[in-house]
Each structure stands twice: as structure tokens, then as C-alpha cells.
Length: 255
Image (cartoon, rainbow, N blue to C red; front, top):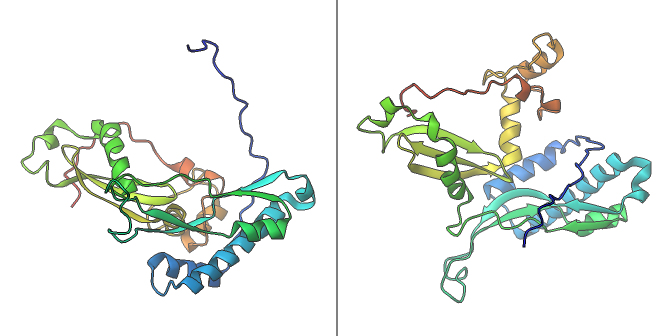
């Protein structure tokens, strides 16, 4: 039996937002951990502790003198990589392969210790499909959502089913890239690193990519973009300057 009265939820209000930069040395080691090079258990454990301290410092800066009033802190850590267990080890009792896991660092125990607050962690569900590729699961959705981007002319070309007609990038904990053919078939789909790292790279190279602030008179922001000094799109000023394309693609496929 369904209650006809809809459930009314109170909107979530963002009270405070504070960017906390990652020290250059720690950032460099996170990149190493992401690549898998020299990511030894000892190095990962050290990073886990350091990121936990960084998260604690961020929480204390945001809360300030009111930290004692905070009931709990929720942290899903920082995603750095996706790993898969060896094929034999990853098989369950029914023979099915276990999906890979996203490695997140940022020791919740350190966060709780340094803030003296209750910390909720490890609440992010599995982020991959049964084949172990999160982006492939998204590809099915992309195919339907972006169906209208195919023109009749391109759809009828002899190579429509084998050549790339559209590339879609999805930003989540792990960014994913999917190449679709002119007929909507998934040609290739793969992860391309933690979503925040990909977004940071785009913002840092905004000028080269032709991204501009919405307000052409914002000379301060424009200069930061030219100098590559921005780490994130503060206030969404770059995103607000974007244009939504409502038409259909007319160009040849992207090679």
C-alpha cells in the first residue's frame, strides 16, 4: 500500500565551505600512490595517517570555536586508485568474480583522535559493476541520454558502428571516460583517475582549453586562469560561463 501523501524533506543547507590546500609534498606522494609506482604498504600507511591529519585540520578550521558543538564528522576519505584482487582470490563461492575496490585513504581513527569528535566513515558503497569497470555501467546510461546527439547523416555512414562519434567523461570518486560509436555502441570505457584530480587538471589548464569566466569584466579571475593558479572552480565561476548545446552533432566522428 502506497501512502499518497508525498514525503517532504527539508532542504540541505550548506553552512560553510572552506578550501584547504594539500601541501605540495603530500600532493606529489598522492600522485605516486595513484600511479601505483613505489606504493608500498608502508608508504600507503603513512599517507593514510597524514591525510587523516589533513582532514582533521580541515574540520577544525571549518568548525572553529564551535567544534565542540559538532555531533559527528562524516568522511569518505580521498580516493587514490582502484585495485582488483587476483582472479583466483577474487572468486566467491559461486565462482563469480568480486568487483575491484576504490582505495580511499584518510585514517578515520586519526580524524577522531585529533578532533575529539565522533567520526562516521567507510559508508561509500561499491563503485563498480559486476565486471569491475564502473565506467562501463555508466556507458549504458550515456548511450540513452545522449542518443539525440547522433545525426541521421552520421548514423548512416559505413563506419558509424566502428568509429568514435562521441567521448563522454563522467566525474565521480573515480573519473571515467567512455567512447561511443555513431550508432551508440560502447567502443571503449575506462577509468582515468580520481575525479577531483581530473577536475583540478582541467581548471589548472583552463586557459589552454579555452575556458573563461562568465563575467568578462572579472579581470582578477581571468588573470588567475591565464597563469594556471586556480586549483578548483571557486563559486562555479568558470562553469557558469559554459554553454549548453541543445542541438545535434553535425561534425565527423572524433578520431
